[in-house]
Length: 426
Image 1 (cartoon, rainbow, N blue to C red):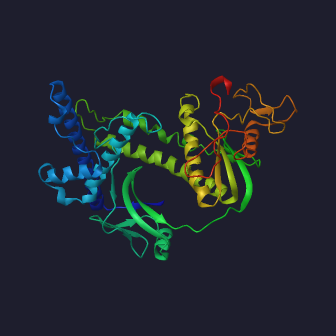
Image 2: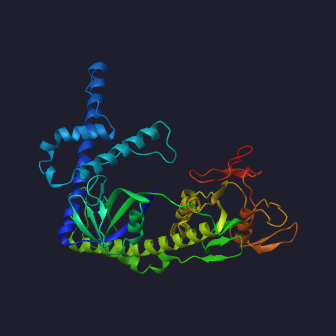
Image 3: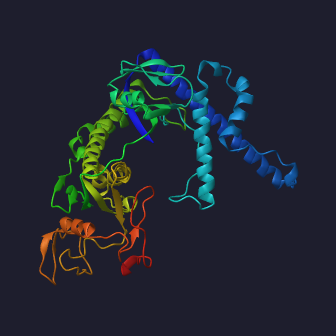
């Protein structure tokens, strides 16, 4: 499965049509959520009156087929305009609600990893991101590679050529499963979810192993000694980020009083969104280039299992860590190593890569974050702290004595031995 994302150049009429479909998806989502909550409240009230469970109000199924069946039965009354939009628009909202209810149920049953998931909330026209997904109907790329055709929206112009996707479609090695139109950073994008047949690839150096230590001073330090600079896109655009002050000085929306935002506030919000997009796009491009190069060259890439969410609680470093994109770097490596025939090894979170000497293996008890040069008291080795950690990561052997963490979907070393110690014992 692979996604191809392109920017759209929409006319005012086409943009209104897309917004209408996104609004239909939001309407179906809110209607179904109100039905679900009404049934839940009614059954709870009936239980307080002592009504037997057999006589309670019938439940409304939370699956997508059940929600779609309820919507089809009521759409003529609640949405007389339903024929103006594609059925895929309503299906988008119902599918989002079904997945949200499923995630909430799994979180309550403790079968879902991660933070607890809240019960779905209603979507606002101003706070939610306009999006609509098409899975059936006419979904294709025109032969000129500059236009796409979507159901009910018709022929839409692309900002760039879709030659890479068209080549795969013409060769029969790809099949479009769905297309999602979404507004991001003030511009409209279309994303094609494609099922592809990939040729077997091999890294340029299949037997080579590289350790990758991420940081703030340098985005990544490789065990080979290469220092990947950190562009710090957010600091570069810090002056443009002052647009948030301009928004705060203008009349914005207030859901408590029902106040609508002014046009000047809307214009400032669009400028602010574009400023953030000019930060996120170069960052994403830089990470893609780095991960593609590493996955295509080395047979094994070793990284650390960083607790990024916990690191973001540090108010002094949270801005720098978020700007670097540690989580995105590992996510891209996880699937690109598989595409290129390599593997990604993730060291256990409590492995002391920075405290261990890469020369003799001695482990320090404490190592302050301010100590940027690692000096071994046993063998006298002195080198950069991040380079020392990268060399220790490269020296890890899959299945060796060091506990490793398995990454889903990648060929990594499994966890061996006893569980890693926690807290001070680590």
